[in-house]
Length: 269
Figure (tube, rainbow, N blue to C red):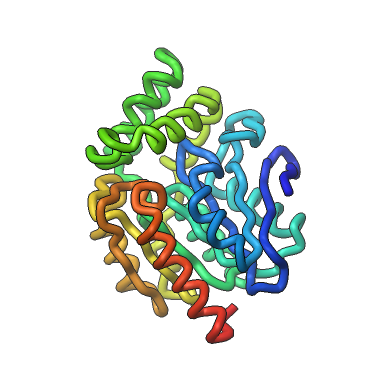
């Protein structure tokens, strides 16, 4: 089933009663279609909800004045609309930032947490300056130039060379976004808070997945989160960079499904 609430487009599938629903939160500057390999597998036994973050995909761009706080508000609104009291949040990169802030703000809404190719720390000053330069470039040259440059930073050289279907799908998802949505999201990412101190308070089971060749949020960032989280496991995904769920879906799904099965059997959800 597909729908929209307050401008946020989403899809809701899978059987009810199979454990807490899993909510997939995509990375910047993509949309919910990046989770297709996971939605197909997880929805066989469990309810799954995937949505387009405001300003991405089929969700409305609005005024472009975004913040991570607004993105969390949208997530909570979607949970309420879907009558989901508690969920397993699975976020990649920006999706991880949103999930971590949601865990800090409303921990009672979480049954589990899956953090993929993400980190808890805020942008450095250097990163903020780079995001400002990217906004200026998007306004001046448009989305296509940005898309072609961005895609090279998130995939391995092997993927870029031998997997045109992945590259093409990601490029198309970026190109479907407006300059307003991209620029507004870059501002939100630059201004996000540091959730590191809140990691020690996360009481739900947590899985961390990261591509071995991820240069944007490298394995070291995942290892730092692992040390701070009370109940977590970390797996490095081989033959993958920042988009580990797409570059090596077999290993990614194996780890994700094992986490969901094990915790469901233990009654954690």
